[in-house]
Image 1 (cartoon, rainbow, N blue to C red):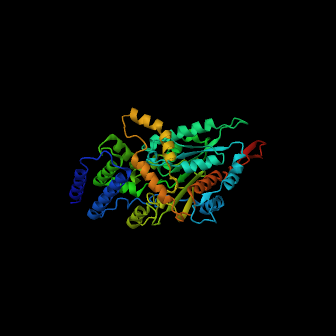
Image 2: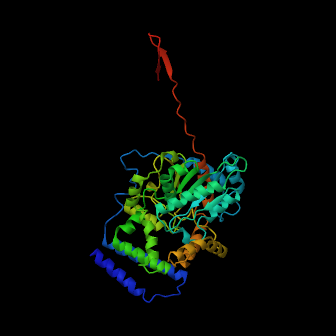
Image 3: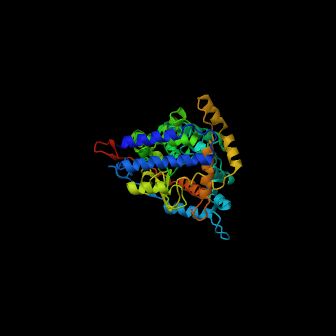
Length: 448
């Protein structure tokens, strides 16, 4: 019955889409996506009581091995409060990072003989959104810290992107040598959402190559254990078809095209089943755990576009989250964690609060090479797409609502970066001195 109802719904939708309108505005495209997703959700909800992620949410903490993680929330807040300054004269303005205080915060690290650079790794489909991670990049550069946004394929698999991240860390390390002693600078890798998984995979797959090049690792809202949204969307073949329909409406590509298939493929890497399989073979190496900080948050604000999705996870699985990632799935075992309790949804860390034509222009130039690569591979869906631009613009308007968040994304990333760089020094095991005793026959025998 479920299959028949869903198939009828999809057939009805397909009929409505013919003929396709060639010149739809981004606003109409966005409405199409919303209507399609709502239709898919209603059909699935009304025809099934199955909860695909029920056995998986928080699986790492429910495992046989004891789950441990050091709570660094208070240390994070101390740094964040120091950097983030609210405008006392106009409370309607958003909180911002104070440049002078940010410089002071990192002064000690800059004076070290081996300073650092920052690599920001975007999440899933990040190429489609102008301004993704630009605010964070610019704040690091404003205090004279070299910072680059990764060119990982935002529609690539975790393993594919792991090699790209590894190459970028090595290149950034090579290109940022100290003038005094030619020592390589180490790299602080910060990843949002799937970007954190790409970094973790790079560290696991290329441990030897990166062990001397990593200054720290920050996971921001990354579904290290998996995501119930990804699991639920792809666990049912009819709902999966609905996802294809939604992407067709969003990007103007045929739902059976290679472009749409490639967009769905990396979502599979975020399912619980895929993460369990991957982590069994490639867990985060022990030597990187002290350098790792995991940040997760929740959203409940009526002004957030992610609240309804977060409520779905809460109602179905009793799990709090930021809209796409549950808090219990965002912590890496035996690392340091920040359990942020203020309002902060899944798009807050990455999207800008101000949108402009210049931002779109810069984005087009930044991804000119990406489009060339796509054309060579036969993918004519050029970036950024109209929906990506409109989506980024609408999201920026939401993020700019005064009073919604307590700390801005720049301050959050500055505090997380400082926390990761302040990893406790590992205690070296003292070698026991070997002693010798004289035996009755005059010979010496060494004892521990």
